[in-house]
Image (cartoon, rainbow, N blue to C red; front, top):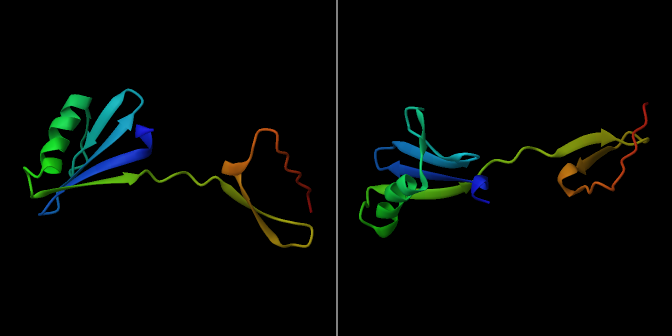
Length: 100
């Protein structure tokens, strides 16, 4: 989905802008930290010129958003550490915990 990625534009001098897809549309974050809403058309008007090579001083990079950690560490009866990846669990899986 578009919400999983962040588009970053950077100038040679180091100024950056990032674009994220939110629930209600796109947002632009300037290098000053100011966040603005922007339409898809506005995003394309900023994005297409550097991708076409018309603005060689701008670079564009797309990164996956950092995902929340969905794992937990537990210890078994022998005291050994076990890691449970919650992302791979199905709703039908059961995990039993016992108090020590």
